[in-house]
Amino acid sequence: MSPGGSSDGGNVNSFYKPAKHEDLLLGKGRYLQDKKNEKIVQREQELLEGCTFSPKLNPFKGQSSTPQRAEDVFTTLYEKSKWLQSQKKDDKTLEETEFEKNKNECTFQPNLHKTK
Image 1 (tube, rainbow, N blue to C red):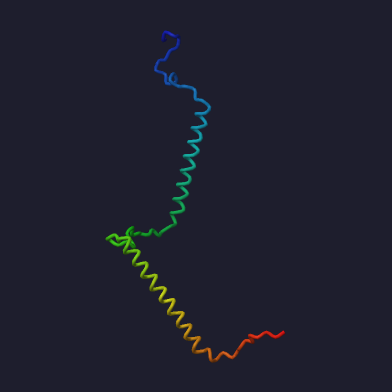
Image 2 (cartoon, rainbow, N blue to C red):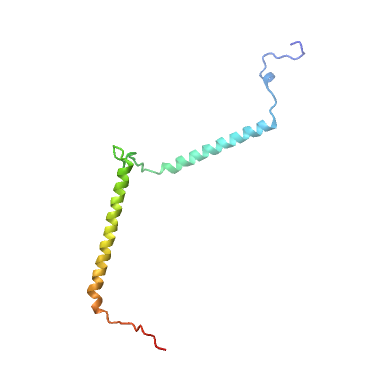
């Protein structure tokens, strides 16, 4: 026996401190969160089991091996824009020429003088 009247005797319970209520709740919360995370991972694995497709992506797709300067990119975009605008102008010109060819066939002439 020790001088205080208690005998340790190497007993594990002598180092045991009663847990506080907060500690118990925190421990239970961690336990429940871990179980929830495990179920999420398990569900994701179950969903992916049926998947047979696994794409192989090229991370450098669409990028040149040499980086372009910003000025070159802007110039290229500007040139494309001008080309597209010229295409639209050509389309309008075709419509106008069609109208010019067919305007003689129009027989309707509105009466611009109102009579009361």
